[in-house]
Length: 343
Image 1: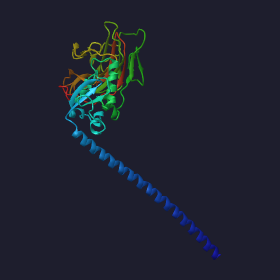
Image 2: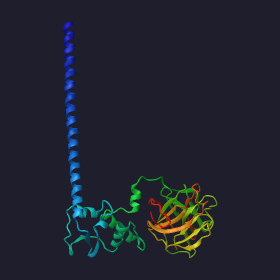
Image 3: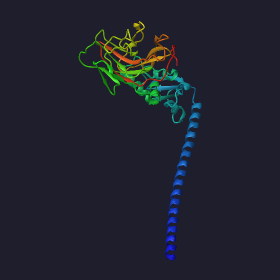
Image 4: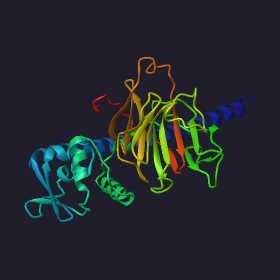
């Protein structure tokens, strides 16, 4: 019996020793794998630091005046302007050391359409990007150029940040002649005659800023036709009422005039909007102003002391009068400007 016990204990100890050796081998293998990963990471970090230093040296060594040959059209600017926005094509062009100004007059050649490249240069200089006067196709071409150059617009930057709660249209505060689509973010005029010539919809939540894209915006139609976009309090607002002169603050998109409950009626403010444009409505510093394709149009309304209180809730609204369109809520740029239109 004693011998049997000894053999049992011996087998148990032997098995435990084998398991310990196996665990030890696994541990050593895992440790080596971790060490290899850390070594690889360290080499990558070193390579990245060396690349950053090389880019810094190359950009410092680059000429202060840069000539660009854009599709055969010459643009001259400063190195400082081209490097003003981080992470663009121009940082790689001047810093990587892979491109040399080997074109006429020591120019860098860019195989791009030069037609609206001046707008790109203006954006790099001033941070103001204008789509004014461009057709929908030209807007797409300009955005394609910006994408090629890896230049982010204010709207791109806004969309890259954490998404705020989505604004939606309220189906319970909507004319029966309007149709809500795409998770209640798109509003369009229903086909056929409605019960009223004035049809409106209100957002589900009060806001200080919202933006709308004009998906379909007919340039022709009833001469009395108007599309109003703005902010309004819920009290006194009617989905079948003509609200612009009695409840809220609006820009009329066909003609660019403004209307408000302060007595403003048809005051000239901006040029009209068209299909593809984005209109932003913003309340800031007791003022209401509008933007067209992220371009500040100036202060439209000065709110009085009582109206400017924080507890006055204003809702996004669209009102269609003798006219129809399709408009979709889109993310708004985050900036808030003062009366001078400055950040």
